Amino acid sequence: MNRPPVPRLSALVASLTLALTTLVASRATAASPIPDENRVNGFAIGLQSYTFNRFTAFEAIEKTASAGAKVIEFYPGQRLSKEDGDMKVDHNAANVDAVVEKLKAKLAKHGIRAVNYGVVGVSKVEAEARKVFDFARKLGLYAITTESADAVATLEALAVEYDICVAFHNHPGSLDKPGYKVWNPLYIAGLVEGRDARIGACADVGHWTRSGIKPVDALRILKGRIISAHLKDLTEFGVPSAHDVPFGQGKCNIGDVLTELRAQGMKGNLSIEYEYNWDNSLPEVTQCVAFVRDFAK
Picture 1: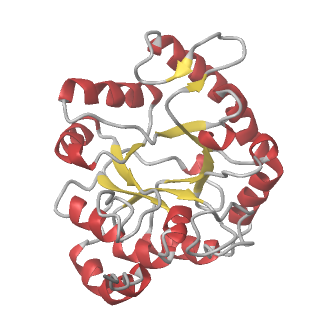
Picture 2 (picture 1 turned 180 degrees about the vertical axis):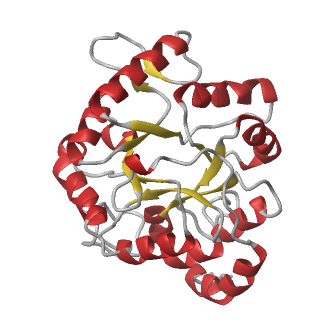
């Protein structure tokens, strides 16, 4: 039997944006803001260290500074440095306090501020979830990025207690694969509706583009709930295999994304997550930072 065609989500987004914008009211987050001194052209633009996953966290900090960015988002499991053996950036590390102190010193040396950690799985069990929040608090982070939607109640309670934001991230998905839901901005809007203002979305505009969703449509659905973003620009729209290109050269309409985020008054971090040319992406990453720096006010 032939299956009926799955409607393009972009059409659904267009028809439901107005309604969801009304439901998801704009609210300022309560967590301590990222200082203006760590912003470029008004944006807390920086790097998701996964961009440099072939390198250590120390090298990622150095490359972030070299690119002209001022903030960084770490991911769990990255090796700390060439000099520190098997030490890793991870909330479960046995030597976590030593990791934090070494990271702080390296960050200070290069004038970079750590603002986020993820994408990290978070348990519904409070004692396990606290390990993530304790790590974030020790580093002075603004937010935690996760896809653990089943733990939303635990995440909300700890976000309030620690005054740290929680952002639900999206990988690619589609309507004909219902087992994975967080790719859909409508699902995230429903998940966070009525919850504390520190609970919201990490807008991965590249993965929305791969999923056939126009990033600006998704941002408008989640208006007032954008905690952070993973910024990418891709070669093609609606194609899972599309790859990164410098901002302004692809199909994600990064200029429109920045315009919308500015209009919403979004104050969280924008992490460049460049997943191409892995061993030598610094020139392209530097172009991305320059695009944001020079973006018209």
